[in-house]
Structure formats: structure tokens, C-alpha cells
Image (cartoon, rainbow over all chains, first blue to last red; front, side, top):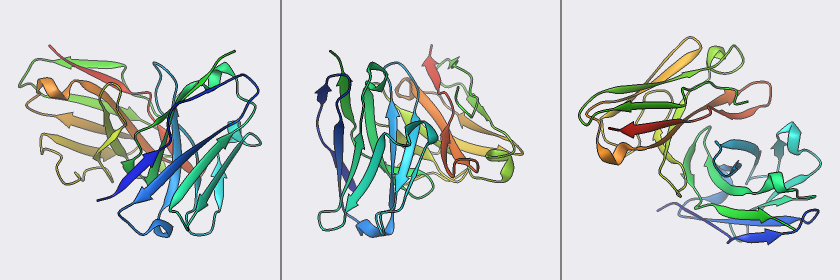
Length: 116
Length: 111
């Protein structure tokens, strides 16, 4: 069965960086891209961008450009999302989702807390 | 502000039918892009409920149905059950960003 398993909770200070991982299993990894979606406490879902698991092409939402890097490692079927220059507004649960134009499968979420 | 507009909340008694609207514009739903729906229970990841406007993944009860017309879409829940109490999100594709856009979410309360 398809599974996406994400890394755990991270606590970071303002200005730091965080790298979240998303390990896929149960399907041929390069066939589908991975989208990253975040959800701030008490708020809705926000799409951050997409990375191709085939060739590493990316598409980032404008507000994150210059601050986010999404990558994949085909050898381990793992996707990564790194977010830099963190502020308190980046405190959220970050989800990866297998992208077919929609998210049929989601990771369990990774909580990132930014606090001094 | 979310690109797609949903009502913040809807409610209904057990057994009733409720609908959730999702209104977009000419660069997403109105451009012919499909609409997908997710259910999110507290503290859990979103779960796909409806894909490509009106298709249910395996395991999703047929009490859930979707429709799309022009620049909007709807999710209907018939025979409302206590376990349906959750947040529901619509999602489509936005041409201007070449990616996903979501509605702000609708909280369904079972009275």
C-alpha cells in the first residue's frame, strides 16, 4: 500500500532553517511528483509548491521563492522540503502529498515550531 | 485570502443532507480545471474524499458526492452521521501559479 512517512517535530529559532523529509513506499517513486502543503494552527491548507520525482523540476509559490528548496532522492524514494529564514509565521504542520493533480496520499504531517 | 471560497461552517441533524459550496474564478474552476475534496478530522492529515469533480476513491461511502458547474463546485453529504463532523476543503488547479489552490475550509457540525 502507498505510504508517505514524514520526519518528526522540529523546534527552531527565528532565522534558522528546517528540512522536512517524506519517504514514499508502495509505488514507483519517479512516476508522481510531490506537493508540499502547510497548515498554520487554526488555519486552512496552503500549497507551497511541487517537485518532480522524475527529474527534480520544481514549481514554488511566489511567496516562498528564494526561501524554499524542494528536492527528491530517487535512490531512497524520499522527498525533502527545506525552508530558510524562519519566522514565527512559519509555525505550522507541513504535509507532503503524492501529486496526481490532487492528493490521493498524504504524509502524516511534520510540526515545525519557530520560537525564540 | 484563499483563492477558492467556501462557507466557514454548515450544520445538520443526523440523517439530513448538507451541501458545501466552492466558488472559484476564470483561472481555476472556470478554466475547466477539476475540483477535488478533502476531509480533515482534528489532528490528522487531509483525506481525499472526491477527485475529478465527482469520483470517490475506494472506501469512501456513497453518502459523499461532488458536482461542478461553471466557476463553482459542491460537495453533498447525505444521511449525515456523527463521524462526518470534520473540516472539508475543496482544491483545484490555478493557471496563474501552475499549481494547487484550496478553499478556506468548511467546518461541518452534526447537531
